[in-house]
Length: 629
Image 1 (cartoon, rainbow, N blue to C red):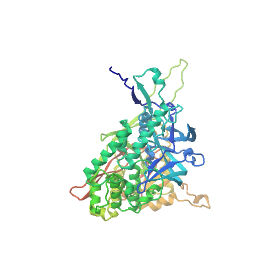
Image 2 (cartoon, helix red, strand yellow; image 1 turned 60 degrees about the horizontal axis):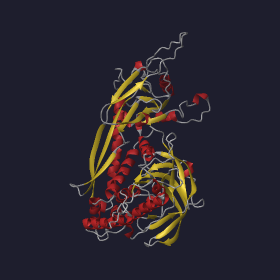
Image 3 (tube, rainbow, N blue to C red; image 1 turned 180 degrees about the horizontal axis):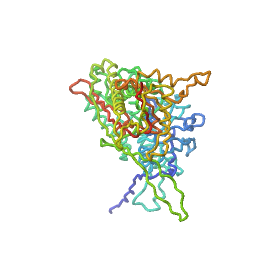
Image 4 (cartoon, rainbow, N blue to C red; image 1 turned 30 degrees about the vertical axis):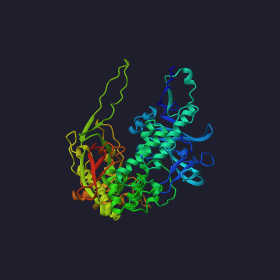
């Protein structure tokens, strides 16, 4: 007799919008920790458990306006997508978990925050992670794999992040169900309603969390990377198949590299436990921060980067190889550097990150100069960027007895400028890397300074050229009331004349007072002492000795002005209130950028430093010029 077997119903994971998500207020609840056991460490590895209790967790930082980040990126303040409104601990089932309410930036204020909010709403981004400081670790046992289990009995969360793959599989954006987190609804197709009601969703969610945790652990233990783990997780690969694929991948990499595979814990070093973050990207940033610190960068060194400060460039290359499962134990220094530059290790990313930090340090160390009176902006492309200035609203008129309201017009002016690209290529030799010659990085710092000097040159040239504006009148002209008819040396009296001229400037309608408040006195190096005297605080004993400009005027000394005139001086408003100049970078940039590639003509690596920059005049109202005497 032929037996028939009923096929099991088809199961799928369906993304959903977290029901705690409030679109109006831009808030959503998250579970930021369940205290899950996670494999930690770079040299000597250990299992880390977070005790989730009132006595163990210090919530003071989270409840003091802690940042809500994307991928623990604490370097990009401008791109922080939100803030932690409040955080608390609660019992979920048999365990304590950490929860919080996070609020995103208002819609339209930050494009990146809007993208992340939409991904959370659509169920694309479901995972969360927490960045924290370990205050006290206690060993509780040894795990089956031989690694010690360390429990954090006192720890302080500092931030909460949205991540693609988190170390804690139970952490993520919350639904309002009774379960701790429900990142995926298990929907059964082909089953009767009665069978659907018998599906144990809590158990299914628990098994799914265990599957994700195990795959992440296997990938990290064997240094296969988060990308490898993510593909297995997204493909719903069962655990037995995942284990087989891990072995297959290890064998494949061993054949390709011709070297033995070893987890990163094989290195015979130890380090002190610091901050705990997820993923190799943060590890590369910490290593780069340490290398840049050794090269003299002034940026404050993150605590988690302290463990790498004493390492040479070759040591960094060795660690990057080990992180990819390539054992450099029998390699010479030259072979280590060559393999790190040629392989898929993070060494090239480390060099690029280090170069970017050194470049930024050189760029930011240069005096701001005229950028202080220039409004920062961005441009989407290299076409001419138009600057449209609207005039004052028309005067409100009384409504007559018939209820008639008259229409009005607004004056406007239009200026334009475009970006240009500037770039150079330079390299660092393999010999410099092997010799740990950090002096080679000074060249990158000089390129950062060169980028700042280029910007300063363009702004000074723009200002001193007295360009013709959209109304066919020069930027500085007696008819505008922003150019002195007499040549006066910089003094209390002449500065008062400039102050009055800006205060009485008119808007585009020619009659409404602009009421510009001056802030900066822009002078060549020849007038630096005079400008400093006008800004100095004097303890006067008589009225005539009072310095009226003390605390009201801020000198800007630009030595490039001396080549044009050693006597001319300017007074300008704060660009936040009245913009005179504007400078822009290509959209997504805020200064020079650096790209790295492996050198062929040069045995080592090469960088390309580029700057997409442009500047133009916005308005004449906020600046005054006196040719001096």
